[in-house]
Amino acid sequence: MDTIPSQNQVRTFIVGLGGPSGSGKSTVAKRVAARLDGNVISMEVYSAAMSSAPFAEREKINYDLPGALDLTLLVNNVRDYAAGKAVDAPIYDFAQHLRVENQHTHIPAKPLLIVEGILALYFEQLRPYFNLSIYLDAPDEICFHRRRVRDITERQRHTEFIQWQWENIVLPAARQYALPSKRYADLVLDSTADVSAMEKSVFDAIQAAMAKHTPAS
Image (cartoon, rainbow, N blue to C red; front, side, top):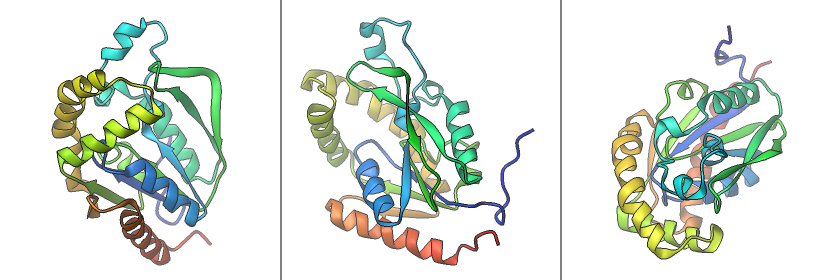
């Protein structure tokens, strides 16, 4: 039976970074990880494989629900990374709502891993692996604007679909699952500021926590 590593067995420092869609998690996580010689796992790419469903059906699926995630694979990868092992994360095609088959992103073992996602702090199976849990908080209107820009520029989505998805899927799921998970955060940060300010806040928090962390001898 797999066991969660105790504090003195963890070879890497793992951060859980949660918050609503559009709070800036992905951008900040990548910037901070680069500065601290770490890696990022985005929970979005662990969406359950839905290759058998037609595009019209895949497009309407609520991927923000806990059950839409391949939690077993995600937990296994985080567990292995915590033990100092490299992992292979899925690759996801957001335009097609599909996991890319037979391809992976190799994530080498490094001293830091940031696990970012809307539900990063939601799952009790993940929380024990986090040495630090951070929740990025921002008003709905700011999150929607950021998500809209991202979906248009990076995911080739139409404005009508973005609005429909926000109102019918993203916002209800955030209020039901993401927002309540804030109580598990060691630190809640206001993410209404610009990216540089957000990056500094998260960087300072992680750097301070890492300095207090005693690695295995």
